Image (cartoon, one colour):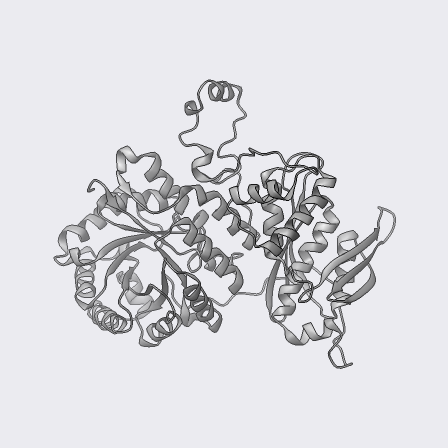
Length: 544
């Protein structure tokens, strides 16, 4: 490996990562995460698979408009219609890239594509040339490269570069390789393809055997200069190589790798936290780098060593990955200046109106909790970001009263506000949360299904904030919500309202019903219920 080599990070969280069950995101969430990825310093954001659906094309276009420094890529099969869809979606990107691929292993050629090697090589050559006429940057991926014949792989890579590919990606599509074998494959392409110096070599490793990161690092050692990965390693099946693990290995073992990159590692924890907040999927406690136990020490021997010298058991500092350490204690007597300063130290820059709303919410929280920790502030801000904050647009909680016990049917009386209008309903249910959600359903005049419900404590003590993540659905799709409060019933109502407001925004007719402006003929409501079965999600025909 050449000393001081520049490694580019290609993040595919919004494309390959989103294909994992439970990780789908709406357009607004994709843009939020893409902006954070730009703040993190990734070189390329793969925003989606434009041909897959109108929603994918729209999200690629939205991310392309939002990012000002980062390259935005759209995936395409080696087909003209796919490439045209990507080019159209990337039209407003400052730095667009079309990423086209075709399978190269005999297994895929015979059973999936029904093509010969020569037919696939010709298709790759023609489609790369076609894409290059639509976009200055073209990446070509040889799907299932690791299981491809080595001589044929070198031939198709050479042809793609001759046709105009600026980046050549060598994926271990099914996570089958071992690090030594993957090194040998990348090295072979790097040394045997005569025109390889005209393109950047990239690697894309899946994690089916838990070797995604190890194989990616082996690829870098063998000459790859772009590594494709996702936040938290999310992705199809067992996922992809994790961005945070790769970059912290390069940083921690700089003596071994000696390379440069643009990732701001202090943003890693916040990026992982945002992904968890958007998707509702918790970060595993033992997750390297960003898990809550990554810098926790319980063993007495470890604690003794840490007190003597942190390097005895920590090979990196919590601050290097952005793990929050409270340096300014906030409470009910704290002023707005100190509050805003702490938010800025945590990486948030709220506008004047949002800052005032957050400070009011902070004061209410401070009346319930003696000490406000950084994790409380992050939960407060992210909950506000996940909801529809403008009361003129969405429903907000005015008040609620619940009556519940182990020998009675739970009853909830919920009052909501929308602009100048107030609405109140009473409902019963199997518990106080169920009753509250049924009351909300009666107010909005639009039935929905409670698909998922998660409750967790933000901090450790009895006065901890409760954080509730919900996913609801109607006939138009799935919607997530998030709410925090020291009262778990209130947190549940707030999370439901967040999801409901997103649902109503996507459904103008239902929104009109809830606002009381629709025709008198209204849809009957039905009780909030848990989903009996998951609806299958439509997937692209082929994936990398």
